[in-house]
View 1 (cartoon, rainbow over the protein chains, first blue to last red):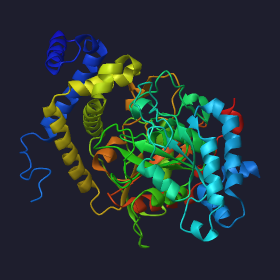
View 2 (cartoon, helix red, strand yellow; view 1 turned 60 degrees about the horizontal axis):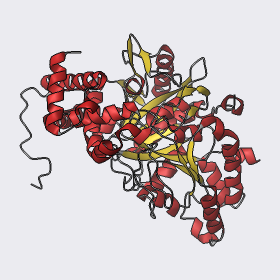
View 3 (tube, chains in turn orange, green; view 1 turned 90 degrees about the horizontal axis):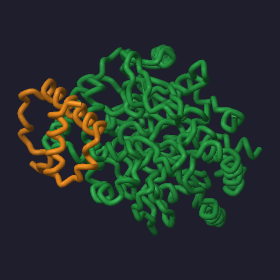
View 4 (tube, each protein chain N blue to C red; view 1 turned 180 degrees about the vertical axis):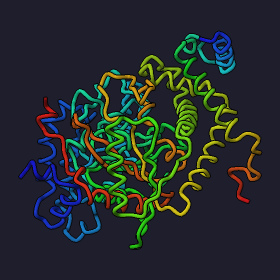
Length: 61
Length: 452
């Protein structure tokens, strides 16, 4: 497992107030990392520089 | 005769009931007889509500005959997934986590079934919180076609029950494929209606922006009757020839699934105007779905997870923790990708009435398998089988799974037909035309296989 990824996730978990023991699980860290990598790759490729919609999602305009 | 009543379709049974050719008591007895004989081999049910069902039947039989005409499910035994409230019954959601869910009132869908005259006779097994795997405290439902095989999930008990003729229909929930995938594995019809068509009030949520409620039946006509009873009114279709996009050329498919789908495409070509289409990236849709569903589920489970963490199945707990760990900015990006995928799908479906594609890339896998091979890739089983379903959960398009073949090992294969939001009737009409042109929906697992 990538030690940097582990440390980043554990630091994030601490910020969220999550129990370190619950989160310090190699499978959980690997799966979270993989999901985020896949999502960010798709967002970069498919959204790119696309600006946010001009109308907010819940606008009544 | 008893066995024939339990095995008949919902629409045929309803016709017999409305004509007074059989009574609700006779129909319920025929179903319960099979339930008691076969459920120990299948684990389809969490709670069998025999007493409550008999009370409902007595009530129905005392009604004046004129009232039943407006009750399309009058006297029909229906089961309900155990993450949907049934008044007076504890909702387990397939978990040992004490949700404290024992309500005096029915979920909206349960109430609508009862108003239509249905006899709610059992609650069905499911993956824990409909989120990935059964809890070890609940034995998994077994596939009636081969009890050593999985039904997949999460509406496991509902599909096993309907396939084995333990009830004439069941209600399931579908967040990323939980009605369609198990329906395809067990050779029954599973409909995920348009997002929001059937209310989710009284359903233990997985993901508030993605959860759907829908029927599981043995024929498309049965699904239409159930949807009309639990959802907003259906549109009436004209008689014009429909234009269907076929997206069966997926890269990684089990060879038997591929052969069955090619044969289905040939049947479609004889009925509709058919064109080949290329769908948006299914892997992106799956990633987006898991991001949104994990984050939304984690929020619902926040307090339960802190208090009862060890009671969850390890895989479910891991998925919920993963949801807690996702940054808000990534959740927002997932929602933006969801919007982009919806626009892509609209472009693909331009001038089409519907699209046909696979449900699962593989047939039912062995009960203990946690990973399956799809083409050259070995994947987590519950993620592999949902390759083709999340796109229509994200976009809210109605999608129906219909049986389209059997492998040489006699394991069912399913075909998915999707239409634009609000056009559930179009998806059902195309599914029904396919059904009428083939015999797959008539095949049922033999009882000897169930009890083997």
